[in-house]
Image (cartoon, rainbow, N blue to C red; front, side, top):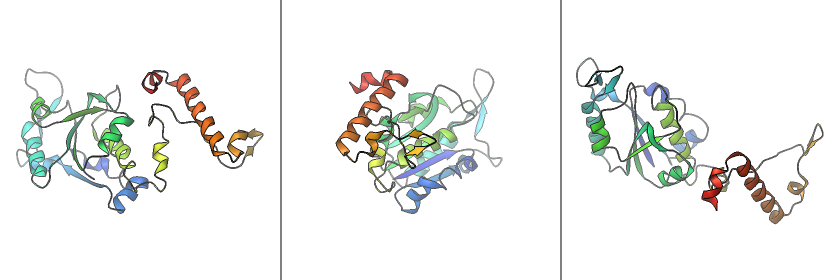
Amino acid sequence: MRIDIITVLPELLESPFSHSIMKRARDKGLLQVEVHHLRQWAVNEYGQVDDYQYGGGAGMVMMCEPLANAIESLSKDRKYDEIIFMTPDGERFNQSIANQLSLKENIIIICGHYKGIDERIREHFVTREISIGDYVLSGGELAAAIVVDAIGRLLPGVLNDETSALMDSFQDNLLAPPVYTRPADFRGWKVPDILLSGDPKKVDDWRYEQSLQRTRERRPDLLDKHE
């Protein structure tokens, strides 16, 4: 999979993809992440990529020309399955969307900044708009990093144990059950006996019941989708 990210602050994206699971995915050649500075396609020698908004109002807007040129330049080399714009008014990102996107081959992610991007880019280029929550960030870079991480860890071969991703919260619209590790008794706080029983069927049943209970208590809205 290849993901191209268009941004005015590429420095913000250096660390998230250089460590841990994302680094492993890139080193294995399973995930290619390319970060592109929008100022490569600036409208003048001063590196301008934004301007005042028509109609007045506070905040600058990312211009049509640099973004259109960036998208068209990248599209000369490959066909993109999705061109995603990270925006607070997009569809709420969830595990189902991450699963869908992990099946794609080539994706562009546009990181908004300032007051956003010219609406004409959204109308004529963007195929999907995604939000990571009901709040506003300084730009779309951190949101893009979250989306790439959620997608990348799902790619076959990235995780040492591929079944691990299938047991994550939200994969079946249930929250994950409690987990424990050694020692079995810490300060008198004991691991549930069922997990020490060595009976996989009983353990699976316990985990399912715990997932149901935790979801019922913390995210009852998910149960409607599960049922």
